[in-house]
Length: 276
Image (cartoon, rainbow, N blue to C red):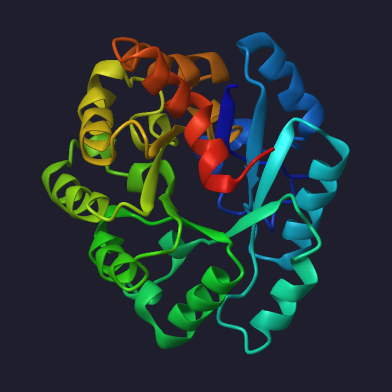
């Protein structure tokens, strides 16, 4: 089964989605399951994990509602304020939603480079672990030092790094990102998504060859058992189309065994998020 481990839905609102700048104008519209279902039929994808794009509980409920009505949405990564004093009560509320698999915070947008290490956030992650929810790590490379300290503190929690930590592919930066990613990958409870890569390169001139060194580092470090394919649809449409995004991964891993390919293209997401 081919599972897209990372995509988004939204009803476009200019204020809510102000991060969609003029260079990304092509995605200033609604993107809903009916749009993605057709894409999946055309590209042979069986299901997906819908990930939050807005930091509200309304967003979490919106995604859960879509998932309840569309069987190809196999799981949801939502948002809740992990620093909230009533976090345990909120998680109790969500326990009844079997399709809610984990949570994410847009740490890349936090001005504090050490946001992940703040006591109230660490307490929140401890509570997530108690409820067996996964956590998606969304950061920029300059925040990877904090990520390393962060995962050190939770050796049994299931983490996944989104978008290979968004290295600055367009600028050719590699070494610092690579060194920290190798260190983080020594923690066997941490996975990594091969997603969001073409939008870290030049939108119009990127080539697979430019991205291959980054993918190679991820696969060498995390291995075929802790790496998963994700499209980052519809954000990926800024720099390409779904078919190109999928082929970027499938062609890169084509020389691997069928077992390894199956794991990367779906098996690992099913295992990590406990999808059915």
